[in-house]
Image 1 (cartoon, rainbow, N blue to C red):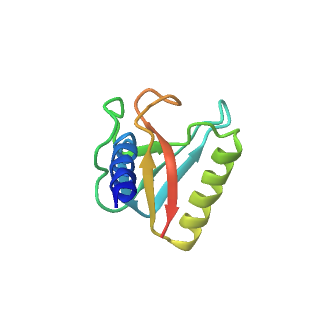
Image 2: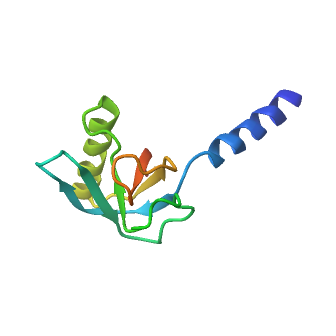
Length: 110
């Protein structure tokens, strides 16, 4: 029982380290040729708990489009748009790729 309580506490603390969350269908995917910046918007309820730096709360950014994770996230978003599929985006709590758009930590296909 003690280990379960510790697991629960650590899970809550880990979740708190994430930034915003939004569930909906992604749309308006942009991939800029000049710098590779990838960003998109989501239909559905507004994002909650966005990072303070995410002053433009309308879009989400793929933090590193050149990484394997970034390429997989882009593939998930493209697939979701094509299938009109609901996803949940969990932010990183940071705006490292662009100063007013929160970086994506997780893309969860529903």
